[in-house]
Image 1 (cartoon, one colour):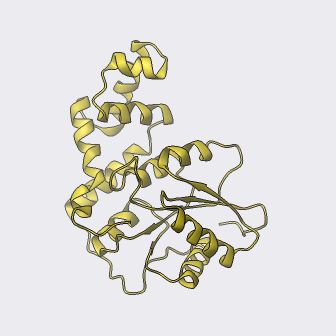
Image 2 (spheres, one colour):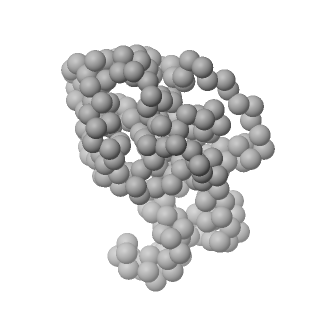
Length: 227
């Protein structure tokens, strides 16, 4: 990872103003000259990431209004695989931390951490380490986790437009509706769907939706105290 300088940029993705302010303060403690940009949703973050000027680090809350479970992390990792994404979350269960790391998170910082610890964690990641809480004990991989990690690798092969089509398939949209939304022909949509099925190694759009939906891991977040 390149050295941080006064041109570096961090993206804070959190829908709570007070915690965005807290993260901004921690970033400034770690790197006073770094520019920080804030996003209140994954959609807004993706728009900002499309900017020609790149970001050096993203700090992401798992609990966002426009996504479920790990969906936000997965969108960022598949669209921008070179961008280090650190989870900063109120979910602190070891299983959730392990899943986040298996999906390519560059670190996991609990929201309960003190500002000085947040700053130290950010510095650690920028120096190339993968940060986890001090009391975290790694979870042994299970078959489901291995399958999900494999699906993440396959998702990374999709183009941004194919990812958009896949998201619309998950919303239950028909080819005609997708074509209207994207302002393309139905033939183009059918071609995208065919490529999605091929790259995900599934035989139908229904199976694609089912397999990708498993990545949300909603059961891990149920009854947890999130922020």
